[in-house]
Image (cartoon, rainbow, N blue to C red; front, top):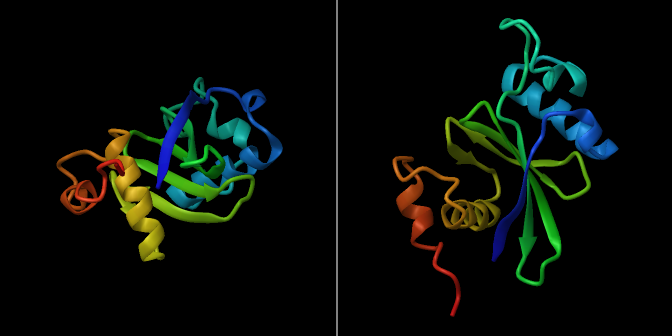
Length: 138
């Protein structure tokens, strides 16, 4: 079981480690197919037509023993990307609030954790499936 923890609002590249800067660039590319540097993605003063990732949050996703497993990014209010911790390997995406993941076991684990953290809206088509697995183990 994994849990979302340590939520941070990301507003400046100075907040990020080098690999997280790379993750941010990949998040933007996954969102809009634009290859732009992290500085442009976080420029809140940019014109409306610039490719800024608004409401940018970074979460740690940890195993039961507290060890980091994933780094999860949320942006644009309904999108996100999940990476293996400390890497640029994207293992899941959030698209219009719904979880997209090719690995069924990982998808179930992340989906249940999203429900427990209140990050998957109850109106999402997958909420019911993931909420059944979201109860903490006794």
